[in-house]
Amino acid sequence: RPGAQQWVPPGSGLDGLRAAAPACHGCELWEPATQVVFSAGSATARVALVGEQPGDQEDRAGEPFVGPAGRLLDQALEAAGIARGDAYVTNAVKHFRFTQTAPGKRRIHQTPDRVHVEACKPWLVSELAVVDPEVVVCLGATAAKALLGPAFRVTKSRGQLFPRLVADQSDEAAVQAGWLMATIHPSAVLHAGTGTDDAEAARDAAFAGLVEDLKVAAAALA
Ligand code: URA
Ligand code: SF4
Image 1 (cartoon, rainbow, N blue to C red):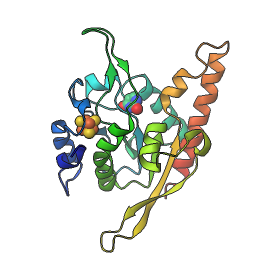
Image 2 (cartoon, protein in one colour; image 1 turned 90 degrees about the horizontal axis):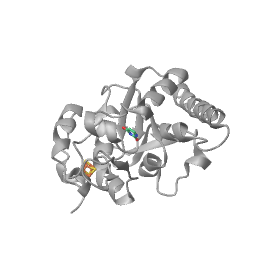
Image 3 (cartoon, protein in one colour; image 1 turned 135 degrees about the horizontal axis):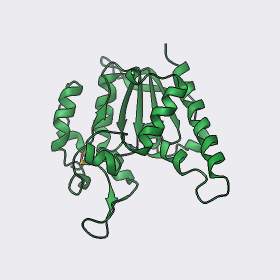
Image 4 (cartoon, helix red, strand yellow; image 1 turned 60 degrees about the vertical axis):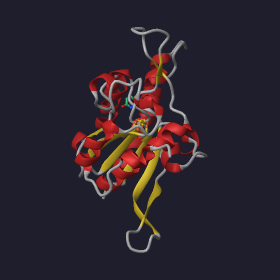
C-alpha cells in the first residue's frame, strides 16, 4: 500500500519520528531529493506552522524554511508577536519535488500533487499529535487542503479559526484539540505584484495580510 504509514513508528516522540523519516519510501519523491526535511522546533511549541514542501535550499540543508520564504516567515512571525521558541515549523510534504532539464541544471519547484500530500500525511498527523499545539497555521493551499479538506479555499477562508478535531483515545469520538487556521504562503508575499508597476506596494500589502492572519493565531493562544 502506498503512503508513509508503514514507516511511521507508532507511539513515538518527535525524536523517534525524526529518526525514522529518512527511511520513508511512501511515495516516489524520496528518490530524486537530497534528503528528507522533517521539521524544526520544540515538541512543546504552542503554534505549529505547516508549509508546503521543502524548497531547493531546504533540500540541501535538511531544515525547513531556511531559504527566502523562511526569512520572510521569520519577519512575519516577529511582526505578529509569535516567538520563534513558541513555533514548530514543518511541511505537508517532506521531500522536495522538482523538475530539472539536465543534471547540474537549476532545480525548479513543482507543487506536490494530492497523492503526495495524502501519502505524506501520516507524518504530519503523527507530529501534530505529539506536539499538540494550541494553534496549527496552514501556510498556503497545499497545507490547508491537507488539514482542512480539498474543498478549502485560502482566499475565501484565510484568517478564520476552525476547531482542530482529533479522535478521543477512549471512545474515538472527535474532540477539539485547539485551533486550525490558514493563511497565504510566505512565498506568495515574495512573488506578489511581480511584473507590475508597483510590486513593492503589492508585496507590502501581502506581507501585512500575512501578519494580520498570524496575529489571529497569536490571539488564540491561551
Ligand atoms: N516553502 C515551504 O513550504 N516549506 C519550506 O520549508 C520552504 C519553503
Ligand atoms: Fe515519504 Fe513524504 Fe517523502 Fe513521500 S514525500 S517519500 S511520503 S516522507
